[in-house]
Length: 151
Image 1 (cartoon, rainbow, N blue to C red):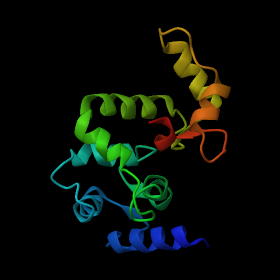
Image 2: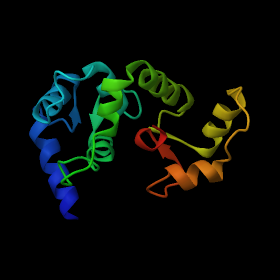
Image 3: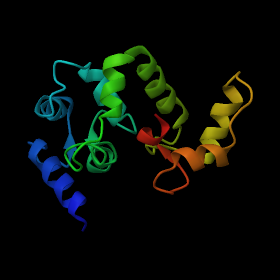
């Protein structure tokens, strides 16, 4: 297990008060409070932006995808999603809702087929190819886009 994973698991366990392996909205609100975002962001939207599959809880995997690029693990990166919650809440809500709508299998990620459906429904031209999106967004190389990669 890598050092960042050990740190993330430790933080996740700290906030998972009932030890059920998931963070509820109230548990996640404590994460936001501890990192200084409790009064700055819409907690409901912040929760939705991290809850990749929209099941109303944040799993360790979802937490790790989000927190892996935060000061919890690194010294100076930004909280991109939390900054969007603060500065562009309507746009972020639309993006989160769009992600959940096209994640038809509720896997917490957009597959190539789900992306094709999104493109078919989108009136804008030119439409990006899956290869373009994968090259710029699929950071973990798993052939899909999780919510953090999508945003």
